[in-house]
Length: 169
Image: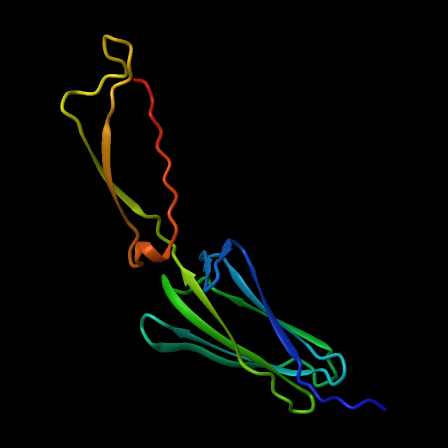
């Protein structure tokens, strides 16, 4: 016979747009979180998860999910739609319990919903009106000042890419 001395192992996967950073995962509104637990000896009894809003400091969901039948299940997966979440930061804590009631250590994940594009406020500053070339054939310079507003987040925490197109009219 075999002795099972360890609980199941739960992993996460995000389907839909997401970008992994060292401390969080940036996700879009259409993303789905998959929690999958495996215990090859005893099987999985449940996956437990709690989703807490970091910004508003309240629990959004606190769920114990069990396989639909009471039979042995080596693996168990659940999908969690993230479509109804408001923009902000959320802590997800999760763990599984096997059929011998051994509980996995709680794991955590921070997800960030940023469903609004940043706004760019800009103006240019030049001593004279801008023209592509001056009479000597040298390109004029144009100083463009801009501010990027990405509410409700701090810009120092989130990378922003800026592209500037100049077209001839």
